[in-house]
Image (tube, rainbow, N blue to C red; front, side, top):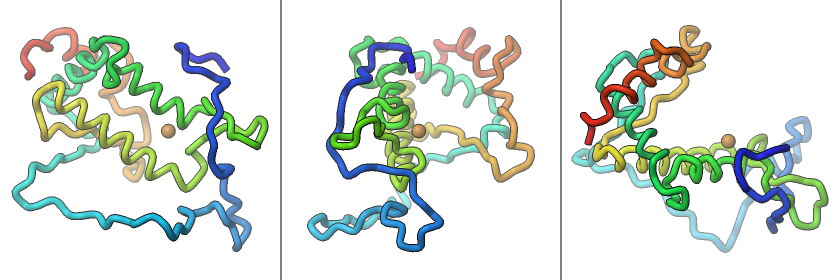
Length: 185
Ligand SMILES: [Cu+2]
């Protein structure tokens, strides 16, 4: 598999073997987070009512040009950061590729790639990954309330590529980034 950049393909990672869960096995041992005895689990604390909240919108319903401009400018600025800045768009992409694209082999299991997809790590990994991606985006446009849109598969209207992501000249996100990037932040 070719990578778009120089992410190493030969690295290895030491962990328990991470396999896709066998959901037909009632004694499945890798379907859920392993039980640990030596790690203190910190309960989630709800934000205070006075804290700024981010409101994520369903992508197929987004038609607010001001929001589209902010989103486009955030991405544009992320892409414009120095290549070695960890917030740079490609650096962020590499974080995802490292964990979700088989960039590592698992020590002691030849040929077994580390892959958080198809395992209990899917939700925790993507939640923290998007949490920080969203914070970086908001920081780059000086908007601590900026929230990423989400792809709403639950709604029949949301079961196709949202217009905002379509590759065409009429696409508002592309248009916004080309014409109004100096108006944000
Ligand atoms: Cu992923």
